[in-house]
Image (cartoon, rainbow, N blue to C red):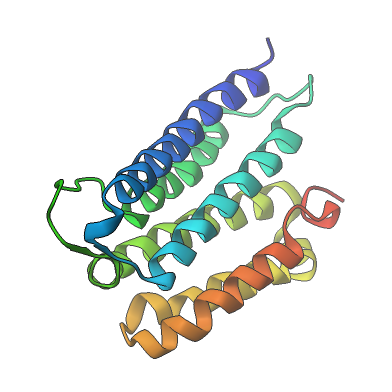
Length: 190
């Protein structure tokens, strides 16, 4: 196995754990659905992080699947560091502990975790952009990764302000931007 394949295996384990945690939390919500006050914003945030994780896996696969990858250790640590915040965001997206028979408000869960959630996704995005800039240069990154830069900038108000009305507008906009630009070939190499 090449070094890139070992890193891909490690990233697959981390993303698999993130997706498993989200599926487990969703299962807990569905089993206790009579006691849940549902909120589309919390569910949309969970869906968004799931799409981000899937997109990051595709980007990682294309970046590290070459047989002749010879990066220094710090480069692999940077790749690993960029996926860990996505795992943390996945853990924060939906509640983990759901007491059977106890009421749970998903809007309150989102409100209490949204800063942490968006900061984790923003950090993962920033670390990805740093990695791309190392690979291709800052000028190339600014020119070719502008949707990702826009995505990062749009997350700042979500971290800073907790106004639900702002989140109702920006979260769907980020989802549309992400889905419209996910895995474009221009972001994966010159």
